[in-house]
Image (cartoon, rainbow, N blue to C red; front, side, top):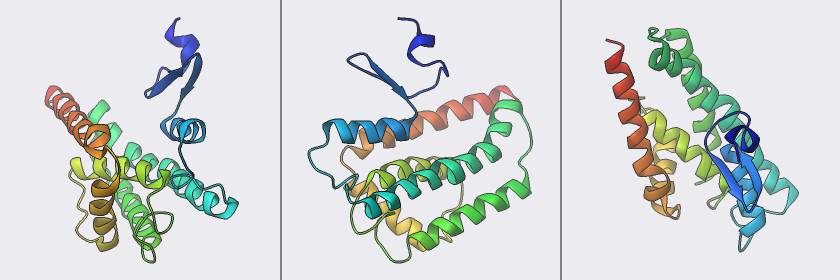
Length: 176
């Protein structure tokens, strides 16, 4: 089957689950949990608890990732200079995330959820790009905890963020 029929956006990740095609990582996570999850700890069935997880997923996509892309992608892919105003928007987003972690050890409460699994991918990418996490005590504590408690963290994210950094370094070296 042609990739355009599986995923007309031509993006990764994309899954093919016995003929069911889906892309966008957060949608895939939710689908896999709903379809194959053994319990609802990662994605609660309680509407209010689930709404908090969803809100954190949307925050990750619409704020953290969006600001990452807005700041870094023009530099990586177009050879632009870093924009200090865009860095300030990043800092604002990190301040928000820091405050979200002020009263709970995980992004959406007292245990690991899909929100943490999505957010840790974003934060690890920020870190590998050299963003300074030192001002954010809650984020650093949460980040260490998620890397230790997320099943298969190193296989799913840890080694892959290093591959992303390698790609970025190669792209930037070619622009010089």
